[in-house]
Image (cartoon, rainbow, N blue to C red):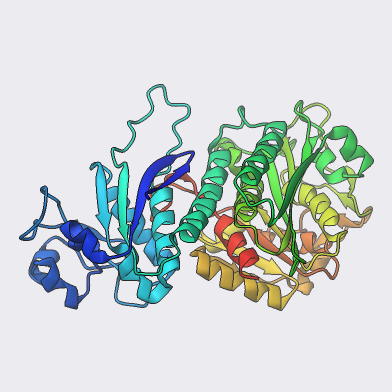
Length: 502
């Protein structure tokens, strides 16, 4: 029975073929490019070399139809490299295959079979489907004439005997759906996605995930704190950043609670600045151009919570999103003002463009009150992190070595690049204020990403905590692997790997 896999961006029919011979008409379409496969492809190595095809992971090349091809099928060679395959390799290869085949109406692929030896049958199928789904992503909501849909409507995947097809497809759909949701939110224009709109999208995502999950596995819920509730709850950081805006702020708390005794309790905190002008410390045009992405941390938390609810791990997870824009209105927080954070800490605001750490301070204070096993915050926090690490790496900081190792392992499994940065105690004096407990920026322009991490560490105490500065990889300027130009959904897969693999 064919399985219909649907997301907002793609609807295809996938048939898991438990015998690779059943896919014989196009079995050569995407075998790994290794020397022992060239004869089976019926292609001389010199032909591949002449095509500039080196077999690198994700490389593709159209090949002459071998003898016996049926219905004019055109084989596609897909490179899998020469090393042991990772899930990231297979997603990249599957995405390349999807793009190469996107102008035909059906595809038969043996890629899951080729990858099964390294990833296991279920893992290989899940990686292939996830890569294809994410490569198909489009954001054309505001196009007068949206691009024509790819004609590819039917995919037949050959998998080894015993593959748990349903579980593999469910996982791929959950993770790809969470990443696509995060991409959608970050790609939205700021004028269309206010703080209230972001909060509503989070609630809607939980409702949709809950409707498609097993109710016996656990329960999911969402609550939104409006301005009055934020005042009552003493969230002075979020209120202070919102002071110049005509749009009300919101704090969203999303929960997954398993029915079984949870193995751990994890709190996620996301920066949700729907547009950052810099406040009264106004950004330049160049600095403001892409500031609709400044809620990428909250988008990753929402996407991850959507996936977690669908996957139903026996880990209790709470997602907190601190949502507002940062505007230079007449009532805006001024340089030199002092804000009172939820945990009682006072902060002298010396740069209103260092606002993300102020809203996260409230979110982190709230998160640690429940004594979780781990708190993780995600934020497009500093340009300084991009200066240090470029656009592909996220900065990883934390106060717990075991948690850092967990995050690094999850990032490797997710194929998301993380680089561990220090929290040097020698720099803590940079945050000393003569009139408050802290200042929100360092006293010089060096080490800005580290100063921000040290600032956040003041609000978690001894609770194990990780900080991911995703300012660089939150978006890409070109299609790359399973990523499409625009928002990447970075962080969703790492969070899911860390939580489900706890």
